[in-house]
Length: 393
Ligand code: UD1
Ligand code: UDP
Image (tube, rainbow, N blue to C red):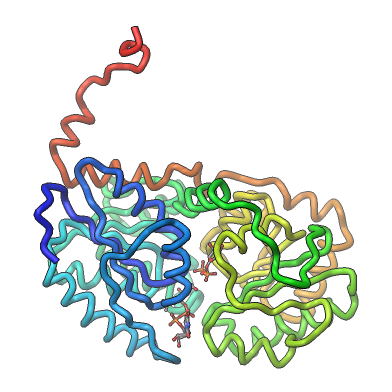
């Protein structure tokens, strides 16, 4: 595909569910730019889940690389992405590449763009756990992306400071906020209240939402999570657990044998994003190892017991919404009991915070890219502006 448009083409690489959610606002913002245009590349590392998100946001990918395979290894995925993204960059006129976060699609997207000497913009830059195996392989994916990228869009001042500490040039770092908040606000304002899956009570006092998918939790840790939920459900028949299962077959193999067909526990397919946000809003609190869910819950003031020992989102811990509890059975039972029975502990976690952004991150990112890629836009931006007040009089 060769573009004749005078606009600069920004390839936006989307692989997985969270990338689709967090890049949808960027794609929509680039569509509205006078000087830039997005070329949306779906790698389909996650096929159905990204398709659903694109539909919700009214986005049609320009290219689909169809790399998803059942039970594929990280090296097979990397090889397939490398060949298909490399060929795609060779066959298209692309002026810059946007990648988000820390997935294999994002890392290989950045690497192939570098091989083509195309500048890379990294959205959600500067998150660090400082443990190379947790989250795995994400921690090193994002470290390597920070070496590859030309422009780093840090969600918070703290993530920007971590980039500076790694000697990333200060003038290439921009604190934009996290686009997850833009997506959250857009989705809530564009969807009617989505019903919860059949059998799930609508009383928020009764609902606990659960997600668990991290690679390092697969195996014994995930079985511990399932056993703890089974025990809590037996002890609290008044509480209902809603657990949308990530499609990774290894997740299902760990969770289903313990939790399928249990009263008080609903296992379901991944929820559409609007349905998930509705469940989040209607829940009492959340048990999760997800990154995006930590950010959304912080924005909404919904407590999360984080099924990990570390987080690259410490801003949410400081804000009071997130509590790191790990995956030990007894720890999960004790911390969940505490939130169920101790109103003061619960209330202390319900103050929402805009620490992850104000909902304008995508506009900010587009404006910086316009300034970097189209000098005329930079010149226009530096011209004295006529205030709206002057125009009206
Ligand atoms: C991936 C990302 C992770 C991100 C997560 C969001 C990598 C290495 N991991 O993890 O950073 O937090 O997405 O959800 O990039 N599968 C299906 N159907 C699907 C999705 C996956 O069958 O819809 C299977 C794949 O074929 C594969 C396995 O699940 O066998 C794992 O998928 P993969 O995309 O490699 O990693 P995730 O654990 O989904
Ligand atoms: N999500 C969703 N449906 C679900 C579970 C999660 O739409 O059934 C959304 C959630 O709102 C968040 C994102 O998926 O925006 C998080 O994705 P995931 O947990 O897969 O990845 P992570 O954020 O951990 O990388």
